[in-house]
Amino acid sequence: MIKSMTGFGKFTKEFKDKTITVEVRSLNSKGADISLRLSSMFRAYELDLRNELTKQLERGKIDLSVFVESKAEDTPIEINIPLAKAYHTKFKELATALGENNADLLKEVIKMPDVMKNERKEADENVWKEIMGCINEAIKELNKFRDQEGKSIEADFKTRLGVISDSLTKILELDKNRLTKIKERIKNNLADVIGMDKIDSNRFEQELIYYIEKLDINEEKVRLKQHLDYFLSTMKENSIGRKLNFITQEIGREINTIGSKANDADMQKLVVLMKDELEKLKEQSSNVL
Image (tube, rainbow, N blue to C red):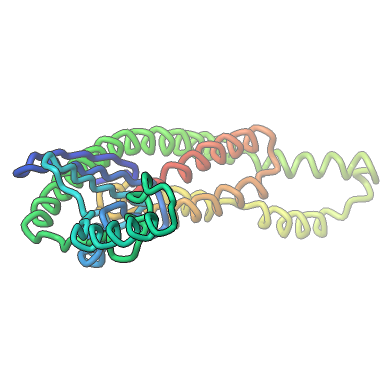
Protein backbone atom coordinates (compact mmCIF):
# COMPACT_ATOMS: atom_id res chain seq x y z
CA MET A 1 0.00 0.00 0.00
CA ILE A 2 1.39 3.39 -1.01
CA LYS A 3 1.93 5.87 1.81
CA SER A 4 3.07 9.47 1.31
CA MET A 5 5.88 11.00 3.36
CA THR A 6 3.87 14.23 3.62
CA GLY A 7 1.52 14.52 6.57
CA PHE A 8 0.31 16.49 9.58
CA GLY A 9 -1.12 15.42 12.91
CA LYS A 10 -2.26 17.28 16.02
CA PHE A 11 -3.59 16.16 19.40
CA THR A 12 -4.59 18.11 22.51
CA LYS A 13 -5.38 16.77 25.99
CA GLU A 14 -6.23 18.23 29.39
CA PHE A 15 -4.18 16.67 32.21
CA LYS A 16 -4.68 17.90 35.77
CA ASP A 17 -3.80 21.60 35.70
CA LYS A 18 -2.08 21.40 32.30
CA THR A 19 -3.04 21.48 28.63
CA ILE A 20 -0.80 19.31 26.44
CA THR A 21 -0.70 20.01 22.69
CA VAL A 22 1.38 18.01 20.23
CA GLU A 23 1.89 18.85 16.56
CA VAL A 24 3.84 16.65 14.16
CA ARG A 25 4.40 17.20 10.45
CA SER A 26 6.55 15.48 7.84
CA LEU A 27 7.86 16.16 4.35
CA ASN A 28 9.83 14.01 1.96
CA SER A 29 13.47 13.25 2.77
CA LYS A 30 15.94 10.48 1.99
CA GLY A 31 16.28 9.57 5.66
CA ALA A 32 14.80 10.37 9.07
CA ASP A 33 15.57 14.06 9.55
CA ILE A 34 14.00 14.82 12.95
CA SER A 35 13.58 18.24 14.54
CA LEU A 36 12.17 18.49 18.08
CA ARG A 37 10.66 21.45 19.88
CA LEU A 38 10.05 20.70 23.54
CA SER A 39 10.86 22.07 26.99
CA SER A 40 14.41 21.63 28.27
CA MET A 41 13.11 19.69 31.27
CA PHE A 42 12.24 16.81 28.91
CA ARG A 43 15.65 16.62 27.21
CA ALA A 44 16.40 13.37 29.07
CA TYR A 45 13.71 11.68 26.95
CA GLU A 46 14.89 13.09 23.63
CA LEU A 47 16.88 10.07 22.43
CA ASP A 48 14.01 7.67 23.18
CA LEU A 49 11.62 10.04 21.45
CA ARG A 50 13.78 10.19 18.32
CA ASN A 51 13.98 6.41 18.21
CA GLU A 52 10.21 6.13 18.57
CA LEU A 53 9.59 8.63 15.78
CA THR A 54 11.98 6.76 13.48
CA LYS A 55 10.28 3.47 14.36
CA GLN A 56 6.75 4.72 13.66
CA LEU A 57 7.36 7.16 10.79
CA GLU A 58 10.43 5.48 9.20
CA ARG A 59 11.72 8.47 7.27
CA GLY A 60 10.98 12.02 6.18
CA LYS A 61 11.73 15.53 7.37
CA ILE A 62 9.86 15.28 10.67
CA ASP A 63 9.08 18.27 12.89
CA LEU A 64 7.58 17.60 16.33
CA SER A 65 6.40 20.34 18.73
CA VAL A 66 5.22 19.75 22.29
CA PHE A 67 3.46 22.57 24.19
CA VAL A 68 2.59 22.19 27.88
CA GLU A 69 0.48 25.06 29.16
CA SER A 70 -0.01 25.26 32.92
CA LYS A 71 -3.25 26.72 34.27
CA ALA A 72 -1.86 27.17 37.78
CA GLU A 73 0.66 29.78 38.88
CA ASP A 74 3.86 28.02 38.10
CA THR A 75 7.14 29.88 37.83
CA PRO A 76 10.73 28.65 38.13
CA ILE A 77 11.83 32.01 39.63
CA GLU A 78 12.61 32.03 43.37
CA ILE A 79 13.54 35.10 45.44
CA ASN A 80 15.85 34.80 48.42
CA ILE A 81 13.90 37.24 50.60
CA PRO A 82 16.19 37.16 53.70
CA LEU A 83 19.23 37.87 51.54
CA ALA A 84 17.38 40.62 49.67
CA LYS A 85 16.45 42.29 53.02
CA ALA A 86 20.06 42.13 54.15
CA TYR A 87 21.25 43.78 50.95
CA HIS A 88 18.56 46.43 51.22
CA THR A 89 19.52 47.28 54.84
CA LYS A 90 23.20 47.62 53.96
CA PHE A 91 22.47 49.74 50.86
CA LYS A 92 20.17 51.95 52.94
CA GLU A 93 22.87 52.43 55.58
CA LEU A 94 25.39 53.25 52.87
CA ALA A 95 23.04 55.77 51.19
CA THR A 96 22.37 57.48 54.54
CA ALA A 97 26.09 57.66 55.30
CA LEU A 98 26.79 59.20 51.91
CA GLY A 99 23.74 61.43 51.91
CA GLU A 100 22.43 59.83 48.75
CA ASN A 101 18.83 59.23 47.64
CA ASN A 102 17.77 55.69 48.58
CA ALA A 103 14.49 55.56 46.59
CA ASP A 104 15.74 53.10 43.93
CA LEU A 105 17.53 50.65 46.16
CA LEU A 106 15.21 47.76 45.17
CA LYS A 107 16.51 47.86 41.58
CA GLU A 108 20.03 47.42 42.87
CA VAL A 109 19.07 44.72 45.37
CA ILE A 110 17.59 42.35 42.75
CA LYS A 111 20.82 42.61 40.71
CA MET A 112 22.91 41.22 43.55
CA PRO A 113 24.20 37.60 43.48
CA ASP A 114 21.87 34.84 44.66
CA VAL A 115 18.89 37.15 45.23
CA MET A 116 17.08 35.83 42.14
CA LYS A 117 17.28 32.13 41.39
CA ASN A 118 16.07 30.46 38.22
CA GLU A 119 15.64 26.87 39.30
CA ARG A 120 15.29 24.27 36.60
CA LYS A 121 12.53 21.87 37.54
CA GLU A 122 12.89 18.17 36.95
CA ALA A 123 10.51 16.47 34.55
CA ASP A 124 7.49 14.76 36.04
CA GLU A 125 7.46 11.18 34.73
CA ASN A 126 3.67 11.05 34.86
CA VAL A 127 3.47 14.21 32.74
CA TRP A 128 5.89 12.68 30.23
CA LYS A 129 3.75 9.54 29.98
CA GLU A 130 0.78 11.74 29.14
CA ILE A 131 2.88 13.64 26.59
CA MET A 132 3.94 10.36 24.93
CA GLY A 133 0.30 9.35 24.74
CA CYS A 134 -0.47 12.63 22.97
CA ILE A 135 2.52 12.12 20.64
CA ASN A 136 1.25 8.66 19.67
CA GLU A 137 -2.22 10.06 18.94
CA ALA A 138 -0.73 12.86 16.81
CA ILE A 139 1.32 10.28 14.91
CA LYS A 140 -1.87 8.30 14.22
CA GLU A 141 -3.42 11.44 12.73
CA LEU A 142 -0.32 12.04 10.63
CA ASN A 143 -0.39 8.46 9.34
CA LYS A 144 -4.04 8.87 8.35
CA PHE A 145 -3.00 11.93 6.37
CA ARG A 146 -0.16 9.94 4.78
CA ASP A 147 -2.56 7.15 3.79
CA GLN A 148 -4.95 9.61 2.14
CA GLU A 149 -2.11 11.25 0.24
CA GLY A 150 -0.88 7.78 -0.74
CA LYS A 151 -4.21 6.98 -2.40
CA SER A 152 -3.93 10.12 -4.53
CA ILE A 153 -0.36 9.24 -5.47
CA GLU A 154 -1.41 5.69 -6.40
CA ALA A 155 -4.14 6.99 -8.71
CA ASP A 156 -1.65 9.36 -10.32
CA PHE A 157 0.89 6.55 -10.76
CA LYS A 158 -1.65 4.40 -12.59
CA THR A 159 -2.55 7.29 -14.88
CA ARG A 160 1.11 7.98 -15.76
CA LEU A 161 1.91 4.32 -16.25
CA GLY A 162 -1.17 3.97 -18.45
CA VAL A 163 0.03 6.76 -20.75
CA ILE A 164 3.50 5.19 -21.01
CA SER A 165 2.01 1.75 -21.67
CA ASP A 166 -0.34 3.11 -24.36
CA SER A 167 2.59 4.90 -25.99
CA LEU A 168 4.58 1.66 -25.97
CA THR A 169 1.68 -0.11 -27.70
CA LYS A 170 1.66 2.55 -30.41
CA ILE A 171 5.44 2.21 -30.77
CA LEU A 172 4.99 -1.54 -31.28
CA GLU A 173 2.61 -0.79 -34.17
CA LEU A 174 4.96 1.77 -35.71
CA ASP A 175 7.92 -0.57 -35.36
CA LYS A 176 6.35 -3.19 -37.65
CA ASN A 177 7.08 -1.14 -40.75
CA ARG A 178 9.82 1.12 -39.36
CA LEU A 179 12.82 -0.94 -40.44
CA THR A 180 11.36 -1.51 -43.89
CA LYS A 181 10.87 2.22 -44.35
CA ILE A 182 14.42 2.89 -43.14
CA LYS A 183 15.80 0.37 -45.66
CA GLU A 184 13.87 1.97 -48.49
CA ARG A 185 14.93 5.46 -47.45
CA ILE A 186 18.60 4.52 -47.34
CA LYS A 187 18.41 2.71 -50.64
CA ASN A 188 16.66 5.63 -52.37
CA ASN A 189 19.10 8.17 -50.93
CA LEU A 190 22.03 6.09 -52.06
CA ALA A 191 20.54 5.69 -55.52
CA ASP A 192 20.08 9.44 -55.81
CA VAL A 193 23.71 10.03 -54.92
CA ILE A 194 25.56 7.36 -56.90
CA GLY A 195 22.88 5.69 -59.06
CA MET A 196 21.29 2.25 -58.74
CA ASP A 197 23.56 0.69 -61.34
CA LYS A 198 26.64 1.43 -59.24
CA ILE A 199 25.31 -0.17 -56.04
CA ASP A 200 26.82 -3.53 -55.10
CA SER A 201 23.70 -5.38 -53.97
CA ASN A 202 25.53 -7.92 -51.82
CA ARG A 203 27.68 -5.33 -50.08
CA PHE A 204 24.68 -3.07 -49.66
CA GLU A 205 22.67 -5.85 -47.99
CA GLN A 206 25.55 -6.70 -45.63
CA GLU A 207 26.03 -3.09 -44.57
CA LEU A 208 22.29 -2.59 -44.26
CA ILE A 209 21.89 -5.63 -42.00
CA TYR A 210 24.67 -4.34 -39.75
CA TYR A 211 23.07 -0.90 -39.60
CA ILE A 212 19.54 -2.20 -39.03
CA GLU A 213 20.75 -4.36 -36.12
CA LYS A 214 21.89 -1.16 -34.42
CA LEU A 215 18.34 0.21 -34.69
CA ASP A 216 16.55 -2.88 -33.42
CA ILE A 217 14.52 -2.09 -30.25
CA ASN A 218 12.91 -5.46 -29.54
CA GLU A 219 14.90 -5.99 -26.32
CA GLU A 220 14.13 -2.48 -25.11
CA LYS A 221 10.40 -2.92 -25.74
CA VAL A 222 10.33 -6.16 -23.77
CA ARG A 223 12.33 -4.73 -20.85
CA LEU A 224 10.24 -1.56 -20.73
CA LYS A 225 7.05 -3.63 -20.50
CA GLN A 226 8.61 -5.70 -17.72
CA HIS A 227 9.62 -2.57 -15.79
CA LEU A 228 6.11 -1.12 -16.08
CA ASP A 229 4.59 -4.35 -14.78
CA TYR A 230 7.17 -4.46 -11.98
CA PHE A 231 6.29 -0.92 -10.96
CA LEU A 232 2.60 -1.85 -10.74
CA SER A 233 3.25 -4.98 -8.66
CA THR A 234 5.64 -3.11 -6.34
CA MET A 235 2.92 -0.57 -5.56
CA LYS A 236 1.17 -3.27 -3.50
CA GLU A 237 4.16 -3.59 -1.13
CA ASN A 238 5.07 -1.49 1.92
CA SER A 239 7.86 1.10 2.29
CA ILE A 240 8.52 1.16 -1.46
CA GLY A 241 9.72 4.72 -2.09
CA ARG A 242 13.37 3.89 -2.74
CA LYS A 243 12.44 0.81 -4.77
CA LEU A 244 10.13 2.81 -7.03
CA ASN A 245 12.91 5.35 -7.59
CA PHE A 246 15.19 2.57 -8.83
CA ILE A 247 12.48 1.22 -11.14
CA THR A 248 11.86 4.66 -12.67
CA GLN A 249 15.57 4.84 -13.45
CA GLU A 250 15.34 1.56 -15.34
CA ILE A 251 12.21 2.73 -17.17
CA GLY A 252 14.02 5.91 -18.18
CA ARG A 253 17.00 3.94 -19.49
CA GLU A 254 14.82 1.89 -21.84
CA ILE A 255 12.83 4.92 -23.04
CA ASN A 256 16.05 6.81 -23.79
CA THR A 257 17.47 3.88 -25.73
CA ILE A 258 14.28 3.55 -27.79
CA GLY A 259 14.47 7.26 -28.53
CA SER A 260 18.10 7.08 -29.64
CA LYS A 261 17.36 4.14 -31.96
CA ALA A 262 13.96 5.22 -33.24
CA ASN A 263 15.00 7.11 -36.37
CA ASP A 264 11.31 7.82 -36.87
CA ALA A 265 9.49 11.12 -36.29
CA ASP A 266 6.21 9.60 -35.06
CA MET A 267 8.04 7.29 -32.70
CA GLN A 268 10.13 10.17 -31.35
CA LYS A 269 6.95 12.07 -30.46
CA LEU A 270 5.78 9.11 -28.41
CA VAL A 271 9.17 8.89 -26.71
CA VAL A 272 8.94 12.57 -25.71
CA LEU A 273 5.47 11.92 -24.28
CA MET A 274 6.76 8.95 -22.28
CA LYS A 275 9.67 11.00 -20.92
CA ASP A 276 7.27 13.71 -19.77
CA GLU A 277 5.11 11.19 -17.92
CA LEU A 278 8.19 9.53 -16.45
CA GLU A 279 9.38 12.83 -14.94
CA LYS A 280 6.02 13.17 -13.20
CA LEU A 281 6.39 9.60 -11.94
CA LYS A 282 9.81 10.45 -10.52
CA GLU A 283 8.48 13.54 -8.75
CA GLN A 284 5.73 11.56 -7.10
CA SER A 285 7.87 8.54 -6.21
CA SER A 286 10.29 10.81 -4.32
CA ASN A 287 7.40 11.57 -1.94
CA VAL A 288 6.53 7.91 -1.30
CA LEU A 289 7.55 6.36 2.01
